[in-house]
Every structure is written in structure tokens, then in C-alpha cells.
Length: 119
Image (cartoon, rainbow, N blue to C red; front, top):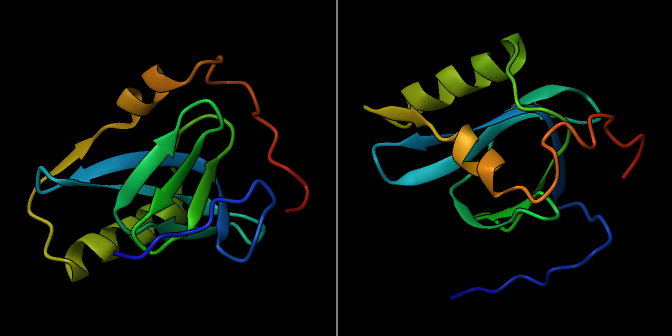
């Protein structure tokens, strides 16, 4: 089983998401959905393996680290990516589990509403 080095400094495998959500598909895997900075492109992650609620960082099956910034939400770019991903992957059931992740945050979910200027 592969392992990934968990750094504190950002790398090419780090993705900052704003206007994010967490979706559970087919009653099993959970995925981050949102706008990836700096280009604000819609993004759907691979399956979430672990999540550090205090730091708001999740590691996915691909080895990427997703940093959740600001409040959850949605927009047309992430909705487009999500709907295409669902179709391509034959998703039959979806459950929004964003509130489950918000409940795990140790700080106010509105903290960090300003996305970092660079990584």
C-alpha cells in the first residue's frame, strides 16, 4: 500500500478549494468538490482517505492534499465539474455530507474566509 509524506509546506500535490462541499457517492466514497485556486477551476477529488479538521486538510486516494478555505458553497464551475464527474463515474446516489465535516471543525467555519494569495 502506498504512503504519502505529509508536509506542512505546500507542494504540487496541494489543492486549495474555495466554495467547497463534500459529497458521498453510492453510499460509500466521499469527495471534495469546489473551486481550485488560483485559477478558480471546478474540481472533484478522488476518494477522501483522511481529514484533519483542525487544519482543514484532507488527503485523497490520489495523494493530493485538499485545503478547505472559507465557507462551503457552490458555483457554476464546480457544479459543472461535479455533474460531469457523476455522469462519467456512473454515480447512482449522492448525499451532501458537508455539514458532517463542518461539525468536525474546531474553529468557527467562517474562519479563514479569505483564501491565501499564494501557496
